[in-house]
Every structure is written in C-alpha cells, then in structure tokens.
Length: 319
Image (cartoon, rainbow, N blue to C red):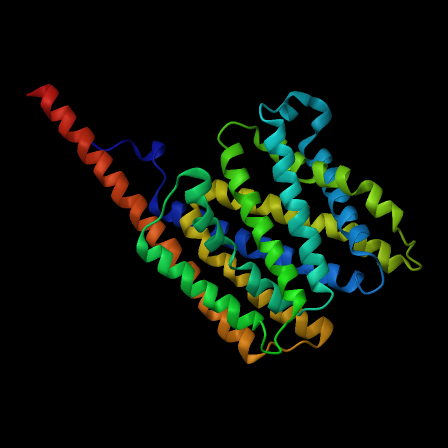
C-alpha cells in the first residue's frame, strides 16, 4: 500500500527542487569566480596577505549576522579543536596560495589547476582515512594529473613557478576537504562555517597588518569588503544547494566555474585561454566527471548489497 500523497513529495516537486539546487550551485561557483577576479585585481596594488585577511574578516562579520551567533554561543563548541585549527590553516593556505598565483596567472589557468582538487581528495582519502579506491579511479586520477601537466607545462616554457603556487593551493584544498569530511560527522554546521574564517583571520592578523597599505580610493575599499561577501555568500549557497539535492547531482555543475572564469578573465583582464589551458582543463574535467560516476556507481552497488542482506535477514526471521 502506497503512502498518502500528502506525505510523499511528487516527482515533479523533487525535480523542481533539484533544478533550484543546481541553479544555486552554478551561482555559488560564480561567486567564487568573482572572488578570484577581485583578488586578482586588488593584488596588483595591495599585498596578497591584506586582501586575504579582509576576505576572512568580512566572512566572519557576515556569518555572525546571518547566523545570529549572539543568540546561542553553544553552536561554537567543538570537540576537536586541533582538527578545527588544522582545517582552518589549510583553508588559509588555499586562499593565500591561490591569491598569490592569481597575480601571475589567468583566471582560467588557476581554476583549471584547482579542478584537480577532487582527484587529489580521492587519492589522499585512502592513506589518510582508509577510504581506498579501485584501479579504475586510480587511472582516472592519473589521466587528470596529465591534464594538470598540460595546463602547467613544467619545463616547456609553460606557466613556471606560479603554477607551483597554484598546485600548493590545490594540495591545501584537498587536506581542507578531508578535514571537513571528518568534522562534519560530529561538529555543528554553524560552527564549521564560523571557524572556516575565524582561524585564518586570527592567523593572518599580524602579518596582514604589518604589510598593510591604505587604499587611496573607495573602489578598492568596496572590493576588499566584497571579497568576504562573495566568499561567504558563495559558501552559504553551496550549503543550501547540498541541503536540497544530493552531491552526485550537484558535483558536475562545479565545473561551470570555468565558464565564469573565462568570461571574467576576458572581460576584466583581456585574457584569452591558451590551447594548452583548454585541452588540459577538458582532460581534468573529464577525469573528474568519471570519478564522480564511479563513486556514485560504487555507492549504489553498496546500497543494493546492504538492502539485499537486510531482506535475506528478514526472510530468515519470518521463515
């Protein structure tokens, strides 16, 4: 007997919610694209540490008002403070390395390299978390790494040492993602959002203020404030999207960020991606999509095995 219509969402409403979540995902990665574009522009006249620090400070201010932290400070309690500090430090590295690389590389180049993040997460999840992957996914990771080499072209008059900075940002992002995966199992979501920016802001305060340059125009001030808004709202939209649709549905649309990056690079900096960037990005995205496909397939097979085992157990009890 099927449940009453009022207690089960219709397929049309489910599809509509997924479309809304996908739209939120596309806008979220667009926000991150604008954040990188602003950082690239500001880094031409202001220290990278100053720009990064303002990004985290404004993130905290925005989170405090949106979450109304003064109403319930218990949400900031954490059972794993050292892992929180480590996670925040990795996001700090991700941001500083990325902003630094953006001084020298095109937006499309840094975003293409950053797309290797999910592959590195899959590779590191085995030795660090015991989540080992099969040979097919290792092949996909290897192919994705070839795509990174095509974009960076080491030793072939390619992107040079700035590409290594961007790679360091990817490594930091992968470790940040793994720490987030661990903390999400026990920590309050609001606390994670706050600590995401609080720890980097504290760590950067003295270095940023020691190199501080006062902007001479209101546009620079507005853009510094906008970094936190784009970053904070982008993360919030990302969370809202994942609350509405499964990660397997949303993940492929993460790669729409390359469209934002190419468009912003062309409009703001007259940057046109090279053939190497387009080719390498295509390989990286293709490898990433295959990884998502394999992970989803393995997850479905595991659920089927679990459901079959549960059914067999029920049959034995009834027989």
